[in-house]
Structures are given as structure tokens and as C-alpha cells.
View (cartoon, rainbow, N blue to C red):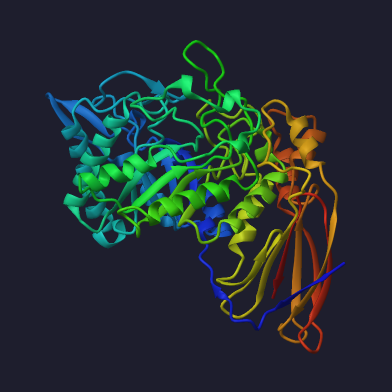
Length: 530
């Protein structure tokens, strides 16, 4: 077995923690719940997230628009309560402007259990007036310098009919009107889009609306034989260039699957996807594609924000609840260092109601934690990434070595088994057996490590996340998969989910340390000097 040698005295290069830039949440109204806010505060403390993005900011349930004596009026009490709490917690918004207040809407099409209106505005000037009023209110309440640190994203996934019952041209018009209104308030405010999903290998989105007859993924066995590209991104950049529109960031949602929205079917009911995952390197390939697109565009210096991402775009995928999700998160983020300003995991909690309230504690929800605040392995993945230092010394296929400002070792070793060459496969609710089968796939590997440049006698903490430590889904199953947890069951699950396997080692008198790590499939080990 070859010994890997790491020298902590090496200079290294600056490391930007893009994995901590942003985290997702379901919708604005959920953020008014006390348990949501409590979970977010803990998540920010443990994982270091700096921004948060969610749907539904302008939906009727936020009480923003009303008519009095025939005049449209604005009310921001619920928005204030939410944004006050975010800033108090220590996290800022990537404010996604959507969906459409019914008083401004051109139609009645809605999406989700909470019925967000997804139609274009009846009057684009009225939409611009709403954004102007809301942002002006924020500037008065929080100050111009604070609001300048925020991001404003126009709509969500407008390429999908489910989220935008309009055309590509209508969305581009929405962006133009919105961007001008925002910059008229203050040129230093940051605006972007188009927040499209997903990457596709065909021309289904080449026209004004999706053409389901052009789908290739349902007809192709080898997904990797296809050439994948972002949706509307090239046209959007060109539209902004031709119309001299402001653009501070480009956003997209690179889910590593052959579908962008759970349960997509053609109008005749024919399935448009087969629920498959692309290759393991698909996220790296997609982010590289976007990086190159921006670099060669008229906007080479804008930021790139991937404002939604996970192993799948399904909120009923048991893969989200099990250990492999953590290894997938860490590998993708480490592989993609330097390619984007954010890769925002969707979402931080299973308090998430697109398909209605969660049916049971573990149901394959998107969240880093369950509705009860029980952390999943994915939660530990982001906590471990957050603990990395700001100086990168070395990274490889299964590790990253960094040091913090005090020169202390901060390293991660992880095992994404070669027996699974794809991005993490789905395990659709209520089938958690497939997720367990994937978790049991692969063989253990042993690493021989030598660290030098440590402080003589320095203690090194070794924490391991594996199938039994920091992973409570199996314990919930042993309890009989209770849909409604007792207080004691909840306490036991939280305690087990929070506990990682912990060991210590000490550097010798010359500042060297030899370790032999055995990594079981999908496990992650953090090696941090105290």
C-alpha cells in the first residue's frame, strides 16, 4: 500500500468555500414557522451558510398585495418578519422574485400544494412597480449598504411549464423589466437569472416553449453518449448583450438526472424521462460548460450561481436520507472547486411542502434534516466541508487537505465506490430498500497517510461518518418506520444522528503523524488538528 505524504508547511493556495455560499429552502411562508427558524439558526452555525434562497416570496399567502378603493396596495409585514429573522440568524437572501401575486397575474395556473401562481404578469409595469416598492422598503428598513450585499434572481425555472405558464420571450421580457427597475433604484444592486433547469442533450427548449417530441433521454440507453448543455443560458446572455441589460450573475440548476421535475409527462400522459442519473462527473462537466460559456460571453466577469442542486430533483427520493448522499455531496463539491461562486444544496430542511406536508419522519425529502430537526448524513457533509481551512494544500479523487489561518490541518477523506459509476441513483418513496442496497454496495479501502509539518505533540481529531455513525435512517427502520414519532423516539434519533465515530492521535516530537484509515463504502472521515 502506497503511503500518501502531506506537508502542512507548504504554502498552498486560497480556497473559497463556495459550498457554504448558499442553501435552499422551500418557500417564504414556511420561514415564518418557529421550528424552521430554529433549524436554520443551527444549520448556519454548524455549516456556515451565508445566503438562503426560497420560492414563494410574492405569493398571496405572504399578504403583499391587496386592492382598496380600486387602488393596488402593498403590505410587507410577513416579509419583514421573515427577513428580520434571517438577518438576526446571520444569513442573507438570494431573493427569488416569484411567484405571481394573483392581483397581478394574467392567468390562474398554479403549482404545488400551496398553489403558487405561475403565469406572467398581466401588466409588466405593475410588476416593476411591485419590485420597486419592495426593494425601496428593504433599503429604508435595512439600509442601502446591507441590501447591496443581497442578490436578486428573477423567477424560478421558467423553461419548465410547471413554473412558467408563458414563453421564453415573455420570461426575457420579465427579466428586462425587472433588471431595469432594480438598477433604477441603485446601480450597485445585484440582479441575475435565468434560474433554468436542467441540463439537456437535445433541442426540446430551442423554441418558445418546451417541445416534448424532441426529448432524447427517454429514447437513449447510454446517457453519456449525448452532449449535455444548459437551458436558455446562451440565448439569455445574448439577449442581455443585444438589449444592453444589466447582468451581475448567471444562475442555473444542474441536477445530475435525465429529468428536471419529478413526475414529468407529455400532454398525452407519456413519461418523458426514465428517472435515471447521469455519470458521476456530470456536475463537474456541467459547471465547466457554464464557466466556459461565461468566460467567452459579453459578460466574462459575472458571477456563476447554481441556485439549486442535489443528487436528484425529487422530494421523495430516499437517497437523500442515507449515507451515500454525503459522499456524493463532498466529492462533487471538491471536484468543482474554482468553477462557481455557489452550488446551493436544495434544501436545508424537510419542512418543505411542495407535495404537501411530509408523510413521515424519513420520506426521501430534500432536506439536510428531517421535519423534527434530525440531521441526515448530508448535514454532516456540509458541516465537514465548512470545517475545512481557507488554504488548499492538495486535493485528489478521494481527499482534500487544507489548513486554517492558524496553520492547523483540516482534511477530508471519502469513499465513493467505483462500483457505482453514476451520480447517486434514485430510490423513490416508499422504496427505501433501494437506498439501503446502494449504501451496501462497494468494498472497503485502506489508506496509509503521513502528515508532516504539524506542531510536535499536537492532537489530531479523527471523526468518521459511516452507515452506523451519524446516520439515523436505519434506526428509524428498526423502530418500525413510525410515521409519527414519540418524544422519546425523536430524542433517540437525534442523539444517534448527531454522533460521529471519534478517535484521536498525536503528532510525534518532530511534528509527524502516521495514520491508517479504513474507509467503508460511502464513508467520510475528517482529520482535523486541534
